[in-house]
Length: 227
Image (tube, rainbow, N blue to C red):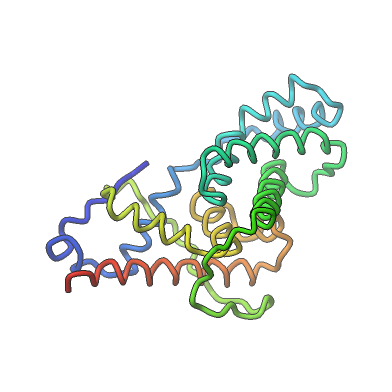
């Protein structure tokens, strides 16, 4: 993962503007995800999976297990639990492949299963996740969010700042955290996230706006330490 140098910020913390810091930090978490899928080959594998072909399903697991695990790990915040949930995702997918109708991509379908399992597990554990101190707009209200793509490889983030960012992400509600991870780490488009979560595109944009606002507030408090 890319890291960004922060030593030029007024003895470590003040000179850079907050939006720039926030943008660089969020993008650093994307791990340079690139969509290199062979859609024709994937469609053939999906057809075989519908027929309970174990070999084909193994190829699908190989293609997606790391990315599913990465998403789940940031939702449940425990590697051991994330491994359990990831395994459950693919078991559930295999058992229900006959119901996969192809109206969304198999990636979207797998991440939808993962998201639902994370939410279910959170509820069962009666886990108390901190909500951001911001009021969500109504579900249909759209906030315009710039869809720029930052380049994390240009800077290197030090461990202290990355820890601050991870803590900020962990303190969000599941709704905000999932949208942030899907958009900024998995590089999913608004439309795909909306399809996966079964919400309007305006809701996706609103949640992304609030997630970034929360991170900006976290970074602002960090940069003001010692001022």
